[in-house]
Length: 227
Image (tube, rainbow, N blue to C red):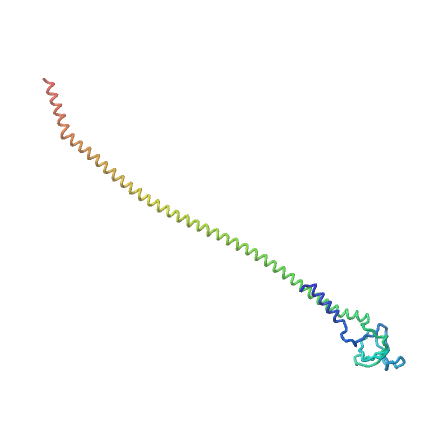
């Protein structure tokens, strides 16, 4: 319920409370004083003068008079109908208004304070909401950063696996190259040995067969030249 609704409700209750519920309750007219007589007769003895605005209770009535009950001791008497009206006197309304105004002012002040408290609570909640939104944004950024780091880790792991495979492949190729190099060296040694053996064989053949023949031919040629 809003603050305005509270005020309207309280004012309505004040108006309802000021209405007389019992139909037999009347009020003395605004004249300064009204005579209360011992019987329903203008010539009857006056037993009391009631002040204007005083509340009375109707017990019975005649053509021109009301039998009433009044005062704190519930005294009885008769009052002329011209001195009685259905509504309180103007000053009674003023007094009633004064009496009703103070509680209304207190209620208004209380409701205003409550409304201020609610405004403060709303402001506090809004501030908390802003702080929570900022915290959520920070956490979201952290999660995004962690996800990026995780993605980078996965990419690095994939690259590492790829490099490992490439390294293994290169190691296999290196082993193969070493094996081929060893084979080439062995073949080179074999070729050099064969070349050496061939040279040695050629030297042996040259020394055992060709050179002696050349020497003999040279000696014969010298002998022929002498003759």
